[in-house]
Image (cartoon, rainbow, N blue to C red; front, side, top):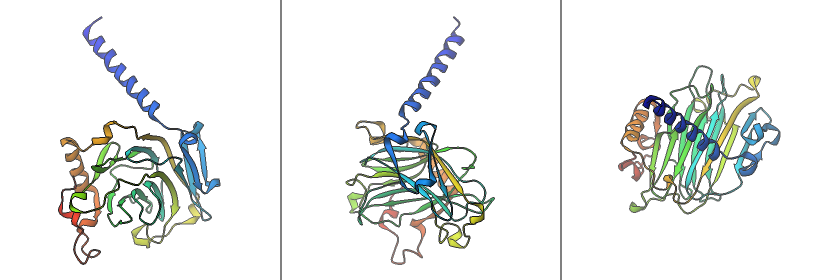
Length: 275
């Protein structure tokens, strides 16, 4: 057999192995999640591999993981409502419970037809939030599924879109700042109306004549195994460059530059590297 054929067979075998690994790591809704609210607006399809959440004037819907997790990598593929999605919010986040809860947020803020979605990220540590960063997407998140991921370890939290980092939130307990590390969190996904603030500060309302709206979720992946690669994961040089590119081109809000909100001075973490 020629060397070129051997190389091709090896390349194809790597692809097959990768695909098997992806399928094997995908979780099943029935095993790992349960509907949280809006029963009639949540549909579980394809033997538990796909969930659609719908929103109309009566209700939205949401689901949550049956288990809690302390650190891990969490992936969700989401396809957002196309067309006029103004006023709607689609979410994928982790949260503990209680007034001093920890939380790691992906929220997708709808917009008028032809205007881009906004990816809204936030971190709560011991009940303290106000750490928002927002991004415009550089692709159409309504035409196909895209993968949104949270890597959470003792050193940092990384937000990723299609495996590219868009935000890093570092552990700065060394200077006395809280970091989520003691409270296990559940995974949540919700689709709801927030037209009092979601689109252009609440100026554009939900057009209920277009309801029902739909958001779709699939390929839930939970990796919380000890010793896994996420435990010490941080961005490498190429990922840091990609992160800088995303933040330079697509970031539309950064709490660390908002002197109107923080009239007494920017939060202390803003003086430190966030890459």
